[in-house]
Image 1 (cartoon, one colour):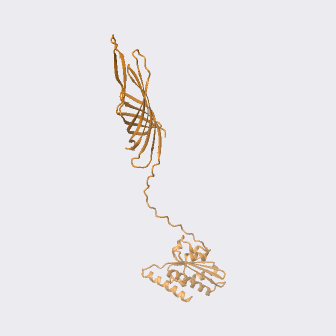
Image 2: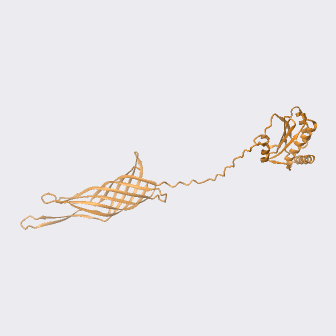
Length: 360
């Protein structure tokens, strides 16, 4: 005990000398007396006699109670100051000393007389002096925070780990979801010496996320019967057709594309007789392979309906429909006149427009 007291005194003296020369500041200290009763004034005086010359700013006071976790608390103003609690309980005394920051501790248990004698006061004072000197100077007999918690029967609250550093990230746009659209249209197309028109259906699929937002499209339509003729014959033409192809986005509202398809044209030819009658109709079918170039504007929502306009150019071979008729000549010779007239001729390039209404 004597050797330990000498060591503590030397540590406290060295700290005081450093403060005097301005190279370091001597830490203050606090001592709380709990349960000393009528012996508190004498014990306070003895602590001041032992420590005032070695600890600057020593505070000794009495406290009404002591809790086992008081030395471990880091959330009060005393946590930055070495503090000792001297708890007297009958013939038993507990010394609980905690260093600044509450990371190092010294615990002692002593037996004392009842009532407290001068010898007990001296022994308690020397124990407090040795504990504070050990905490300030750092020496053997120190308890870690975990060891002190176990000795006190206190469960330490483990602070959650700090959140990981937040790394600024560029939010990448999610790829567009595949989109299927379905609509109807009505188109008109200049063919030869006439204008073909009729309804149809259109389906598109897009959303691959590739450059240009490629779109697959499929059109199918019907050209309603179109009448051609003169005083010699009547020609009616209708057609079922289909186109399929690919379009790319030219701008936010314009797509351009190309495709191929097929037309199945049905012709019904009726020749008129000289007396104004009609002969038996002649039916014929033609298959035409067609290429298509297109530009679509929209869709744009108008009056609650998605609408677009498509300009296109169909390219295919040209076909003709002729009339061959023979008329008898007047007079006595009994001759005939043969007539060869072209009633219909399609062109190779067939421009057109369509109005599209989308409901999906």
